[in-house]
Structures are given as C-alpha cells and as structure tokens.
Image (tube, rainbow, N blue to C red; front, side):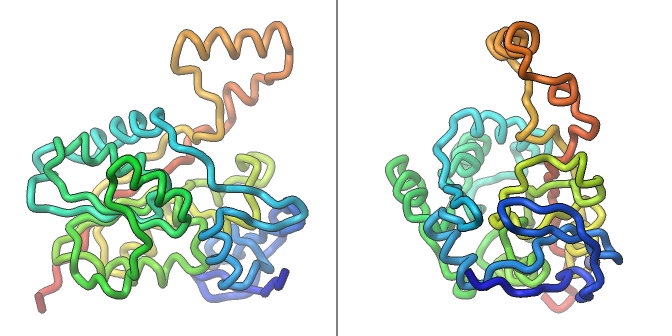
Length: 286
Ligand SMILES: [Zn+2]
C-alpha cells in the first residue's frame, strides 16, 4: 500500500510528536492544536475505495461493514430528544444523513419526527445501501457537489474521523444547506487524552484522525456555524450495564470468569462520544 506523509488539517503544520501505533500504522499528535492523526496514511483513492468496499488493509485486513442494529435506533431516539423539540422538525423540511450506514439514524429521525420530515441518506458501501433499500429507506451514494442549498438538516455520524480533511469537507457540507440550515455531527472527544487512556482499538487505518470538542467547535465557528448545543456521552466501546441481563452477564465475567477489570467497568474518562448541533450563521447577502 502507498503511504503518504501528511500534516495537521487544522493548523496546516507538520510539527507533531509520536502518539501511538496499531495495525502497522502510526498516530501522531499535532504540537499546536493537539489533533491526533494517522501519519503517514493511505492515499485518498485507497481511502475512498476502502469506504466503498468496507475493507481496510493493514497488517491485518479489517472488515468495517458491520450489521444493522435496532439498539442503535433506540439510542439515537434518546439522543435526538436531548437536542430537538419535536415541533422543530416540522413537515416540508428535509434531512440528509451522510455516511448513513445501515440507516439506523435515519429510522430514528423518521420516528422522532412522526414521519414529518423527508429523510434521505448517502452511503458509499453498497452492502449497506442494499440493506437500507430493503427497509424502504431513501439511500444512495449522492454527489455532494450536485446538491446546492438543498437541505434543512445534514448529519454526519461516525464520519468525521474517516475523512482525510474534515475542515474542507465541512465547507462542502455547508453548501448543501438552505439558509438557516443545520448540521448535526457526531465524533469522538478524545485527542486531549494520553494514548494510555484512549479507547482501543483505534481502527487504523480506518480512523484517520481523532479530535475533541475544542477542535471541532472552533472549525465549525471558523467556517460559519453557530454552536447550538454540544453533549458528550459515554463511549460505545466501553461496556454499559443498561439492563438486568447485561448486569448478570458482567457480574459473571467479573466474579466467575475474572476476565473483566474495574477499569473496563469504570474507565477513567468515559465520556467521549460527542454530538454537536450547529446552525449556519445568517448571511446578510441572502
Ligand atoms: Zn493542529
């Protein structure tokens, strides 16, 4: 595989220090803003090809296609209720979910808005697109350049870390929004943590960078968004005891099998799954 040296997309500087490595790849930390990013990294064409096929190559090839999860739909419904009043999602509005995967977030928007919103998804992985279509979701891999000022809402969940240059990508996303349009973005809040405390695996080379609240909010403000709300949740890679069944299961693992540690149950920095609701700054020229 072709590996290409890269700089921090946030500061455009090369100065960085070693952070950690995995799967034959190295993560470095920008000395200025603290962004953690893969360096060197696969060429852009290889990244796109991997996103389309769901296969990434490293010392071990990893399949990132995954599967549909109803549990995710319920989790997203809860998160939506923390960010939006139902009356804000009125009819005649539309929502585009970019990198919609198996469509769980789309399903939660449809349910939360009582089917009032027109919900569309864009996804490069054909297996995921087919799965969405079977569940009657409107999903395709759309040309983002062809959709100028089209949407009231655009969301990016678990997409940010996969993009070679999120700053430039977000500028492109901005063009998709109607005046007063909104962005809903989910990514990790973890680049400020020492590597020792970072959740693992990193999924290198699939995750190209790890940011945090300060970095992402500053980028959004710089390119013309107001931050409406940010909320940070317990990370999905940590175990969560959310039912009697899971309580019994983890008690068994902890007391009987003894393959679960206190640090896994109570991680030092559990909150790192970040959601941001941002709105386009009014443009006086509109
Ligand atoms: Zn930087």
